[in-house]
Image (tube, rainbow, N blue to C red; front, side, top):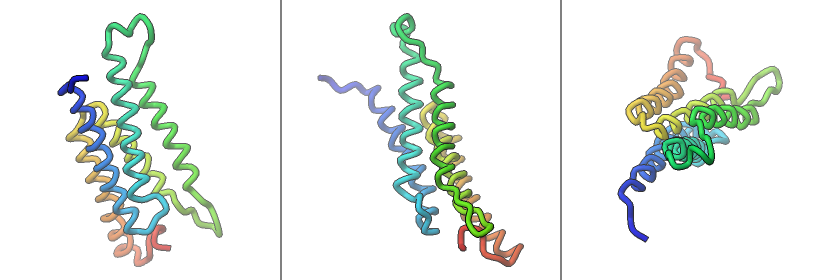
Amino acid sequence: MSFDIFQLQPFLQLLLAAFLGALIGLEREYKRKEAGLKTFALVSFGACFFTTVAVYLSSQSHLASVIRIDPTRVIQAVAIGIGFIGSGLIIHQRGQIEGLTTAAALWAVAAIGIGVGVKLYFLAILGAFLVVGILAGFRLIEERLFHKKSEEDE
């Protein structure tokens, strides 16, 4: 079995996706949310893996007569699947909704994993930093402008 340099790129894609997911998960971990570092890293990793495999299979001309792979359908399935996971995080109790921000962040991190899977590295990295900025920065704005604790602090 020989080493193929082209197998290194998908491996690095998976590492980047997991790293970007973990970066966002760190913020959730800091806020002591149920879904944190591991969950966000795994969601981004999984979305990237599904996407990378779908893109690879769709590019193999010798498979075209046997199977038909449309990467956009796989991406759609990932987005829907993460929606189901996110809906399990949302809890309505005592007139308040909890977990909505974490569910939205999981959905965004899946999109980041998909971005890495289709080799949109700059967009995925920018997206990850924007999500961290939204989660951490907007909380500070909410606290200062509205003089209240954000939904996550309660």
